Amino acid sequence: MNDQTRIRCPKCGTAQTGVIDSRENADHTVVRRRRKCPVCGEKFTTYERYSPKTFKEN
Ligand SMILES: [Zn+2]
Image 1 (cartoon, rainbow, N blue to C red):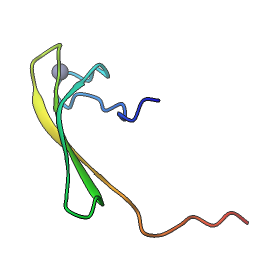
Image 2: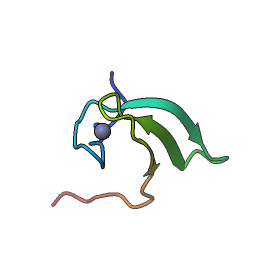
Image 3: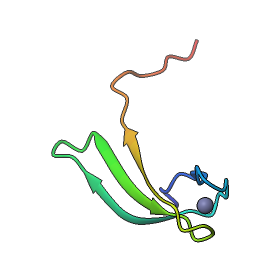
Image 4: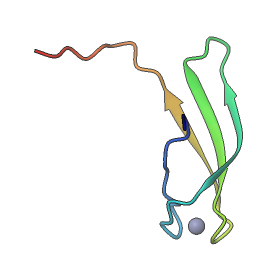
């Protein structure tokens, strides 16, 4: 349901950061999220990258 990974604020450490904008690149392999901390007001950006490799379970 929730596709927003919990990221802690690099400044104050709270996990209650909010996403203010998210964008994918052209082939949808990288998602960039702009986040803002509601506690201290710090703004930062995270990148989520799809891995082309699959994990084998054996
Ligand atoms: Zn903060």
